[in-house]
Length: 256
View (cartoon, rainbow, N blue to C red):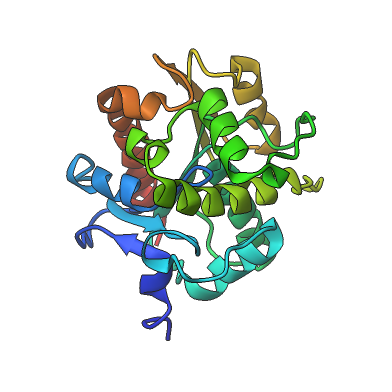
């Protein structure tokens, strides 16, 4: 039923029917391609990277600027089935993965066996109000680059690429800056929390994800800043592989 819509929303690695599916949600302004590269180094997972409109193969599609329609669109077009799967999100991608999980629960649909969030404070914590999405293109890119890094040099050096990057960044920051956490029952699944030791997101903000689930929460920090997972990917991928092994173990031990 979703055979036409699914390729627009997902960029997928090689099929691995015996492995759990890992759906990856990129950071603000990010593209699915970065996470698709993990397929080679995570043989224990079948990688599906979420491609939002306004970037990559969906460059000419209208962008989302608020969370609710983004989540609604994804759930309408991505066939998340009963097979074991997990979510990974970095930065804004963590928030999207969390809200998709809550929406799945509200719709009484199968949930991910594990939520892996990275570089993002627990969403119920108070946030400093920002309006970065209202800045002119050049100022937006400069501010994001100065605060978080992560924008490739070739993008910064090209007027055309800066314009494209600003489109996705502006949309994603509008999603983030207009987001309002809604109180509700905590989730009941395990959450793995990653972060960089030199990031502006503190250990306490990462640990606060514990308050959003009754399941086990593990927090691990790695050397590096906000994009620690690019700086030293090997230990991050080892830890992620370990989290996914637990997904497979739980699935095998579950009663028929």
